[in-house]
Image 1 (cartoon, rainbow, N blue to C red):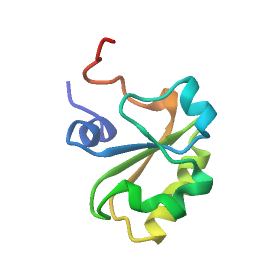
Image 2: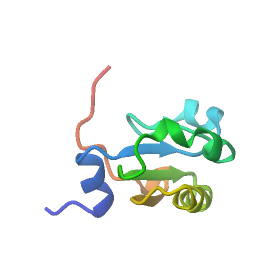
Image 3: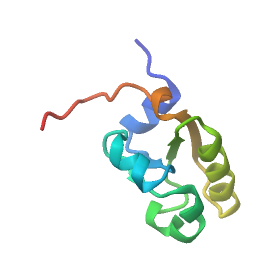
Image 4: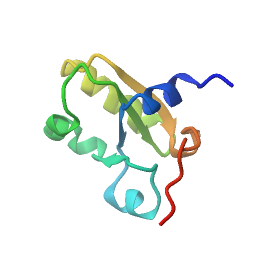
Length: 98
């Protein structure tokens, strides 16, 4: 079965950024995601890494991640994907047991 574009990016090492609040992130988040709330994305964009690395953004519904994507693109990030909401994210390819 072919991977969708978001799955392919994640499989190939894209950074996954959750742009919801710290509280939302602590309740539930995608495995290995980095939490950078949308209202901090401009100031903390350097935490994402090189501007040519693929970045997958998500939030609760896709609205905040769409806004964050516009901000990152305006800062020169060239491979930014809005994956929508947390529940739109693909199933993790490898589930790590705690």
